Image (tube, rainbow, N blue to C red; front, side):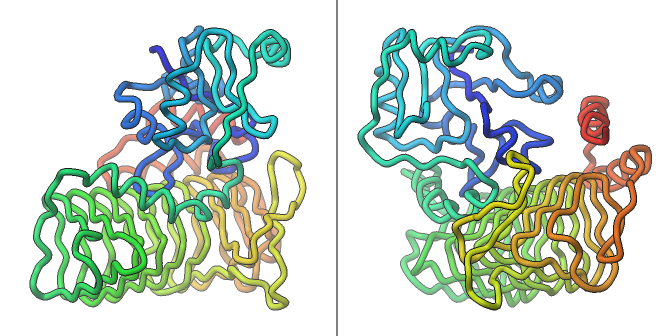
Length: 387
């Protein structure tokens, strides 16, 4: 493997989403970050991540020809600049490392590596996923970039005559096997990409951009405001705005999800609602695993960040900037705390520990419905996080 995407500080700053995956497996736009780089570079790319994640994601612990920080989003110019790096050179932007050649087997003495290398300053703007809310903040630009990358030189499947299309048909792409019936699709403000075997049921109202990935479903009457990305095998109903669902997650009923990011294997009960704007219109503060405290997001709109395998019951209300960890189960009336730790069970009246064996049991049942097994590697990751 000649190129590796390394997590670095992003492993902590992007939690809870990176508690269960490397940074480069996060979806922004249509593709994951790793998929973007592989398409731009035309090669398979490895990952350098935490040891407990390496067992599942085949992490690389040896020296490589090139290392790229995993939260960095590629552009044509950036990719060409990185390709031109020579041995002993580090590409930087405003004091932050973007890429280095070669990439060492260990970064334990990273400061020493920096001092012994030639630093090159990249003179164009870059986009970097550093915090969970960067995912929905950058989703619009990445959706447009991925749409151009995936559809160039290809012909879309035809849109069924029962639908209404507003805008230029070049901004709509339907993959093979997808089904779209009796819905309104507006592509005047952003492209709509409908993945292989995805389904848009009757009566949906969609204002792009939208990425509806492979086998994902929009249920009848769903209202989608872009830029929104719905990952593979997810089912979504109700109202959604500027949110990203990584995959295999259900928000199947009415309720509002706005400016939010949901991990995999989550489920929002009927009429679960997120607040994404404070009553005084001030910027939202949210819990950060890096600082172990609430920090300024710099955003006026910020809803829910939820880690893998977490759930909410019917009529759950999430306040602005709520962060929910992995394998949490939130229920009860009223607003729960704005930070719900992993393996928590409860609501506004307080939480108790969700036992690991029970978490395994629920995860196995949920994943079985998609004909996917909870592997021993998955269990070891959850065991590590439960301690």
